[in-house]
Length: 537
Picture 1 (cartoon, rainbow, N blue to C red):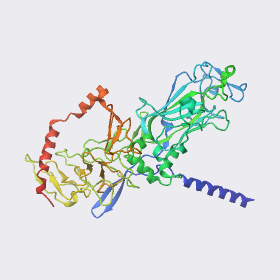
Picture 2: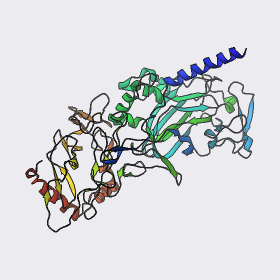
Picture 3: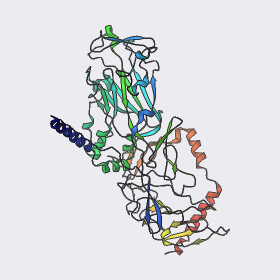
Picture 4: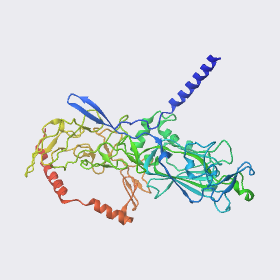
């Protein structure tokens, strides 16, 4: 008997283990921002792309209901079951055991037998019974698993799930749900399995989760993992392919990014073709649980995210700062800020912020590039750059050691500018530019699938009609650029222009003002680089 039980348990364990192996933890890599390595010259940091772990985001959510008095119990009222209109309960906000406030949608199930939020009944029929449930994080988050809504009542006949990327100022639909999509939203019904790589961003209406009264079917999904599977395979084994698509296709990554979610309950389940006016107490909404799993968006510059003053903040590394690690720290603006990159797999590219070249009198330590490492590394603390002898006469000289000339193989010539205490690459090739040939020339863009030392790191193919789609009505011209409507700007027309926002324009003008001293230094640098052809190694 014991042997048979053991064998049964073993078989169960094997089955569970095999199932778990088919579904690896989504986005489970990039859990270190830097590692220390040792070579002959000393210790160095190898910087890599990094991101926080996925967590239960409902622990940090703020919930708002509209209308605010939609919760049952004030005044007390009778609520009856869909299957049996004579089996009724009381909802009373003044009695804990009979109250159903909004926080019970995401609490730990402690009260016996269960807890749930519940709306008022449809006592004002035929006036619509509609509720907006807004989930706000005051932080940009990236969804990593399915959104799951568990109803205590029957699932609604009509519902829309919406998302915001600008903290609730504007909204866009994520998915429509209805018992009859054509009648409710004038849309043909579809399921996620009907989509493909090329249509994965399509907004669909599904009838799978909006059937009438069924005691064992009370869950609604928004399928994140099924959409991941179009790129990573049905068992999510090929995560490298998913990372590559997320890295190179901005609107795909934006699709899984939100600041807020909104559940719009438009019509409760009625169970029949017609509403029964004699039993309106059985028509209502009740939700026992909402599951949202994701991570703080930190632009691949942090592994941690902390709560401070009821707000989530990235614990930024790579010399970055800001709520989303979206800018370089002061004195680390030697090149424009850039998000980290998932590519090349498995460590990605850190794209760290490097010291500013204008810190005259306080020369920064030189970043060190190590062979076959995909990111900038900081040299060991005992090894510093050439000493700066400040003088009133500007001078240019050849860098004093060839190892300080790092141009990612796009040039083999550098100059050392004593006044600015920096080494600058000369005559960058392969459509590159910048102090280390690390940027692309005007009209070319970073090929996220190539390393910084690849000859094809800068390309012209900005948009297409499949994955890199011009947004907001923009038109792709010869794969070179998006022609945007007047009110939008950006590489893919993804940003609102400031033409219709005078406040934004004035703010931009203020931020864009250039002081005289940096301008003089810039002109000096340009003049000095004009002489650089004389200094060749």
